[in-house]
Length: 255
Image (tube, rainbow, N blue to C red; front, side, top):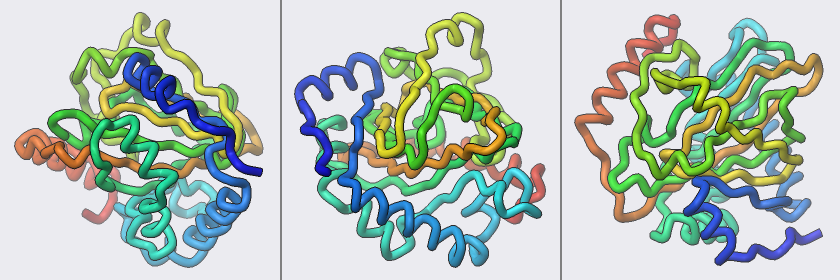
């Protein structure tokens, strides 16, 4: 079954206003099924060969607690996925600029693990100017409040950068330092189905609770694109890298 048609004008207006959009049933079912098979192939055959900074576990002695994989675009299959028009055309529409790949990742919240995602803004990690960067987040299973759905603050992308500090959460080294009850009162939970796509702006504030279910993981596939006209604020990026490396060393990773 083909995905429903996209109303480009309405989608762009929603993204510009809220800093995020949901595209329901984004991929054709055969493509979605293939993506899931290839991700399992990567987990089984490639992840055991990766350095610590490419694949993160809640408990490295338990393979079922794998919670994040980075740099998937280095794999031949995922390298061609990120170039497919369905992804790139949507990125171009929302960015208002030619999309350039920033990275390809997989995220998970394993069932029964205490793994919250701290409130943060992606562009705090990227340091791109102007902040024309977005994250596309495809749910691989149904996602709700029990298994740790994303929570967005609508319109937060319009208010710029918030101060961050070390979070001590592996894979999300920085979190918003002054996140308040007022912020929490503005959150909107993203309850979505498998194959629904979330797209959020680089300054959109988001977080997620731990997965409180006993038997449901929360895996997702992500692609980050930046606009071709963006440049890196090198001083800010170097500062972030030093902080991230210090945190990795503190958590016992080889960096």
